[in-house]
Length: 125
Image (cartoon, rainbow, N blue to C red; front, side):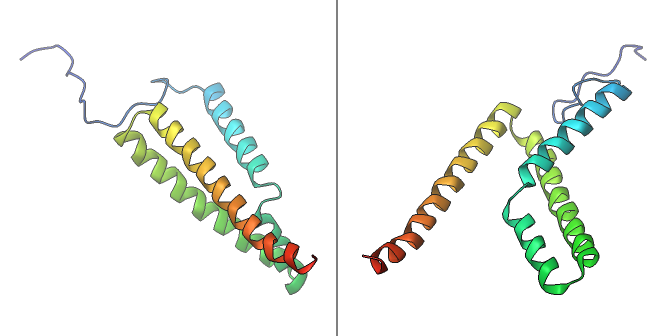
């Protein structure tokens, strides 16, 4: 029997950036994630929908719980998909693909907004 350590498994998922996570690395990732998601969600359609639902229903706590559960579930999908994608492609390709997707969505939404504004412009002419 050999006492040498096993060779790394190339098909194994990548390890975290540090093999021994510390409390400071955990809190850094947690705060970075919480801040990024919080800022990304400010003023988006989800927040506006929650605002309208709360105003219409008159039950802000129920709307808060429902919106929170929905955000947790959608975040779970993102985390699981991100974890799987990290095993399929390198991080730099994943970042590039996410950037291209965001630009494409932005252009599509801008096009939709322009098409919706065009009839309004014709009515006022």
